Every structure is written in structure tokens, then in C-alpha cells.
Amino acid sequence: MKQQLPGVYTAKRKDQTTYYRASLTYRNKHISLGSFDNPEAAHRAYLTAGSLLENPDLTLQHFHAESPLPFIKWVILLNFRDNGLYFSTPIYIRPRFFYYYFSLTEFFIFDLEDLFYYSTRRISRRGGHYFVADYGMQVNIMSRYGIKNYAVEGRDYRFINGNSQDLRYENIEIINRYNGVYAVNTNGTIHYQVKIHVKGNINVGTYTSETEAAIAYNKAVDMLKKAGVNKDYSPNYMEGMSPAAYADLYASVKISSGVRNYRCE
Image (cartoon, rainbow, N blue to C red; front, side, top):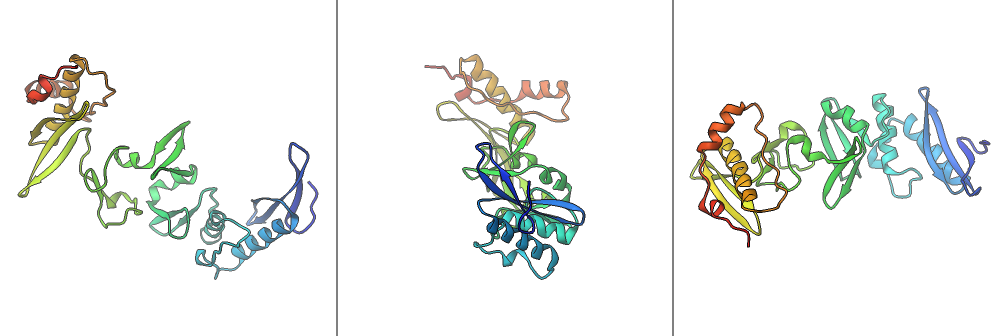
């Protein structure tokens, strides 16, 4: 590639048309700034990047829509300038947590223990859900907290400080951990109601412990499958429970007549 304006290089696409790349070196790190249709735009990106890296007074609040560099690149460069770490994802580190930015007003706050994970995986958004590509699969980021795809905020989990952008572990409380199990507070007493969906919700029962309720759901799944219900239910996994203890509770747990007597039409 032939250099022309400072930081600008010409390149050829597969169809042999010309485009322009901008890059610079900072702290012995070669940083690509993107591709542009003309050399002037590439040079402006080079100058903007140089200013961000050299001027400590420039912050994310100085970003504007006319900038030759996208907002995500601003985040990456400012984090490198201020924290000495270059990531390809829009992360800005603070002393005890870090931000993952989408825009100035759209971001997540994560614990530092998640830094390696999100510095190597870009978050995508679709239909109000947030995913990362993990070993070829799309993984909902809320699953890292034990929150299932169909979970409802306020019913199955809650943000303790009320900020749904704050995904630090200490800020997330799981209310309902198991499939089909819902905690119900009656005059200060917690019970666990279990429902299972066939054509509509069927009440399985109400139980005093979350473990009993989770196993009741599993038992209801087994009963419905024996009755001919062909649905892909996800049974609850009882971590740390011995097979003998599971079998005893499975045998003793009571299931509603609505499940026991269900017949496929």
C-alpha cells in the first residue's frame, strides 16, 4: 500500500476499486482506524485519533455525530490512553468495574472479573436481548447470571439498585431460579407455585420449598410426556442433590389432578 497523507494508505478491493485506510501507532501499538472512500476522510480520522490519544482533556462527552471516527472507536482509544489496555470491544475500565458502551446513554456496567470475557466477545442486540458469540453459539448474556431467556424482570429476577444497565453480580437478585417455579409472598410467607404450559398454563401445585417445587415441575413433565404431550420441556437440574435424595423427594411430592388426569385430545 502506498502512503499519501499522514496516516493514510491506498488499498484495492477485489473488484480493483480504490479505497483508503487510516492507521497510527501509539505506545508501540499499531491501530487500524477503518476504511474510507476518500483520502481526506481517512486523514481526518487519523488526526482525530491522534487528538484523542494525546489530549487528556478529551472525553466521551466530546463525541459528536460529525466525528470521522465512530463512537465505539472513541471508547477503545480513550481506554487505551487512560488505562494502557487496548481492546477491540468498546470497554472503558474504572477502578472496580468497567463500562461496555453502545452509545453515551446506552451501556452496561460489569464486574472486573468479566473483563476478559467481554474484551474478547462483542455484544450484539436483537429484539431487546443481548448476545455474544461463544464457541459458534449465540449466548444471551443474562444466562451468565442464571437468568433464562423467558425470564421476566420483577417476577423472576430484579436489579437491586433499580438500574437495569448495572450487571454487576451484587446488583442482580434471582427470584425464580427454576423452570415453572414462581415465588409467591402471602402475608410475609414465601411459597412456591408451579405451573406448566401445554395449550395454556396448568397449575401443578404450591410448595413450601423451592427445591420441592422444582422437582414437582420435573415430575409434571414426566407425567405429561407419558400422557402423550409432545413438547420440548427443559427439566430443572438440581445441583448438589444426590440421586437418592432426588428420588425420595420425587416420589413424595404431590402433583395436581389437572396434571395427573391430563389427556391429549
